[in-house]
Structures are given as C-alpha cells and as structure tokens.
Length: 86
Image (cartoon, rainbow, N blue to C red; front, side, top):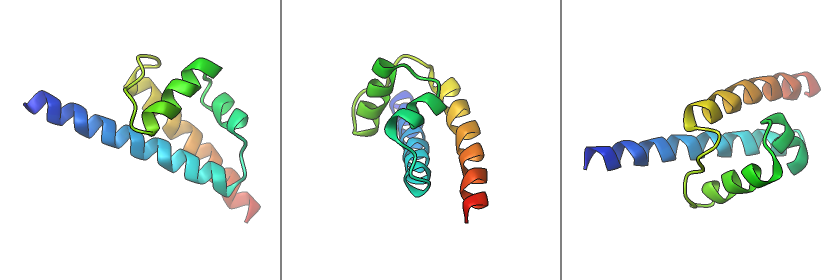
C-alpha cells in the first residue's frame, strides 16, 4: 500500500511539473514542436508524455528523475525568456 501511495505522489508531482511547463509555454506562445524539442524528446516519446499528462500511464523513457531534471532546467530557461519579454 505504501508503494502505491509513493507512486501516486510521484505521478502527481510529475504531472504538476508538466502542467507548469505547458502553462509557461502557453505564456510565451511556444509551439508544441518547440516544447518537444526543448525537452529533447522524439515525436513518439512526446506523445507518450502528453498521454501521461492526460491521465495515461507513466512512460518508461526518459525515466522520471531524468524527465523532472529536463523539466526543471527547461522551465528555468523559459522563465528567463518570459521575464525578458515582459
């Protein structure tokens, strides 16, 4: 039971980070393709992560720690761009 709770929290955190990434992408009008490239994902992997965000299963690649690192770095860089534009 604890394992399921931990995985649920991991999914929740990862979805929240993806949602924040998309909100920032919307703010600076970043296209879907630019978002995919910013996270260094191929088309298939991008589609899997988008399905995950819409309550799908957790993709195997990149692993969650790697995806969270990518999201963190990318959101930081995008926030700098957003700040410079305002």
